[in-house]
Image (cartoon, rainbow, N blue to C red):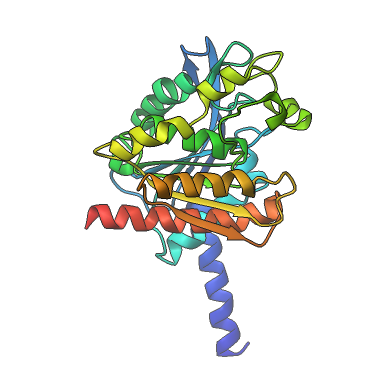
Length: 286
């Protein structure tokens, strides 16, 4: 065996050992008074950890669950690599299950907004010694989860240091029933009323929250990314949000990348979201 082969083999072995030392706990549960039942979540903890870790709450999309970001998104492998490269500081990643709730309080699915803000975050941060303050807490998600992450952060600007959205299901407020397709109404799964209620949708939407977000003393850093070939045309809503934030004077990092509404794209985009959160953490620490 040559020296080069020996070194390469050793590097692979050390990499595998480091990955094995990281901790991924899937389908944990906590009691949620808001839901009146248990709420499941998965938790990633890095190998390098001491003291209280920063936390990223990472939300799944429609039809997903608390395991999606690992089984389909390979989040553990990505986080392990970026931490090992010192591209991001060690952090915890919490991945809750929210069904098809759109992360709002609704009769159809339950009080998921309250479950996340009042049950999940306080309980997991004490139980696992993570987060604890807005400066050490972020929220991000894909598609329906991107909608949820932005909405929760915009409506609670002092709760998160950063919010990120990947191919978020964003729609400006609706003026007419014709402004939304039957396909999209089907994707809403009754979260905004059955039959679909335009007024209910607009009440829950977050475009109206932008003025108060702009006026807030503390507000999250914002990272929005979407594929230019998104099969649902979600680049339109994402661009509309970008323009609305810019007009309001709210800083936002916006990326339109090459890709469709697929896990192939999200596995790439989540790396950019993690790197951005790492920059936010370092800036606020320094």
